[in-house]
Picture 1: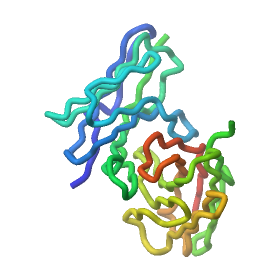
Picture 2: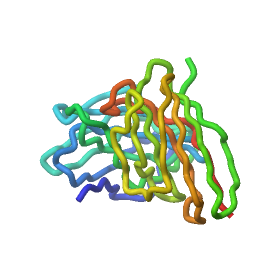
Picture 3: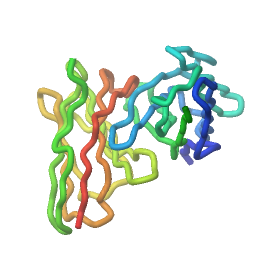
Picture 4: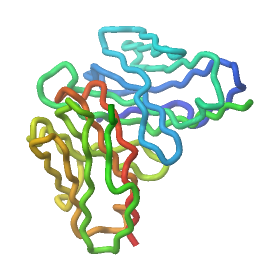
Length: 116
Length: 113
């Protein structure tokens, strides 16, 4: 069946450290992935995306790695700041390469807490 | 540019009532998707509309319906509300029907009492 899951429900780091948030997906047909950040009381905020024909993509202070062999996705945040504290979700899209539609399937989320 | 806007931000309804939630996508975006997020979980897909046609439907009862207007805004309707419908309802917009680079609104917090 379809599922996107996270290995660790919570992650606590010190300010300035690098953070790594992991995500496992089970549907090998998924061809597009997005990481979202959600702060309390707000909607998910787009962070970075990656297509299945890529292994790595970098943004500002963030890097997403995709390992299709083991169906694993990770989000790396460099020099983590207190403002990065939030719930992080990975989402997979199984139809991005097709012409039908794009349903995002979300994982449960990881709570990232950054201590000053 | 305005992002995805949803209204209202909060709503309290009684069991059995119906509710209409509204979403305006980012200018130029033609796809609108609706998600339900209960506390402690990730968003669950309800509907996607693209170019005013339903493109996808999640595993939700027929009490849930939606539509998209010519200006690409959208409404989500829920009839015969149950306590379990209490959740954050999120709207996401995307330029393409494939929902790449989907951006979310702030959500509507629905409480059913």
